[in-house]
Image 1 (cartoon, rainbow, N blue to C red):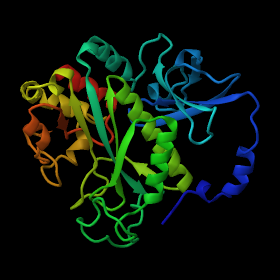
Image 2: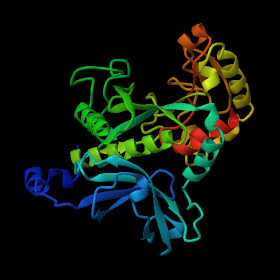
Image 3: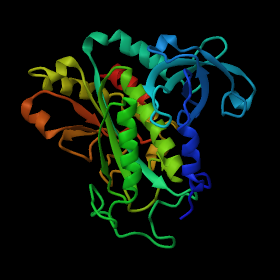
Length: 359
């Protein structure tokens, strides 16, 4: 299995420098989404003191040459700090700073879906929309081969791996545990994790989060995952169907409710929302992956616990439907529903904004 060269560097040597005092300075790593709608970028600046609120962080400009931004032209854009987290890699008092990107005219840059999401969420604040997102991903070697898979063959068929225990069933648990603890340290609202159906495939869950917070939380959790994998010398892939054939794909199932759905008799409002969603199925398919449905078409086949991409369906406890109403919600007549269509590489800002707008 091919791992990265940087992962083979002597970490004890690095640690002697990381243990040095940093005086009264603070390292703030600015993180943003590039124009692909999938890629994360970052760079660090030194601050004179520890920021207590997001308003204390300066706007930073950046030349976006060779960053897939505006055709690779050299153009200055602005990084606008939006959310701040503790840095689990450099530790306190250092920060991770999630930013949105604005063009020089202060309009949202290509790939910036946060601005519209924030606008919609502010308009419906009184409905208290809650989201929970289940992020599936696949661990790969640097050469793209699934982590732990035999080099010239396949592992045993699916069945033993979901929530599995043991070296022959759980591939890469060290990475999962490191990511989980790093998220907790950072302040991410991570609420669980488990091994998935395909070996080397895992899932973590974030939420419940209200409004714009959902997108912020999931993006920073993804960033932390990429950084943890960097240290271990492997790659976290959000490809919706990383391995063709009789293997599960990777989604980002999204749980959604409003205040009225969570109250007594809320099932009626859940069913009404699902009816409205049924009329905008093809719109949601276009929104639910960065390639307008092309990536998700490889996953949503009607097999491997998915619905058919061309058809809308809903049902209680039906994991092969577009929308699933959990069994407990059907019994209690209130709660939430799960949209199983979003791809693993979806933009959570776009997904949550579309759900709120359509429901």
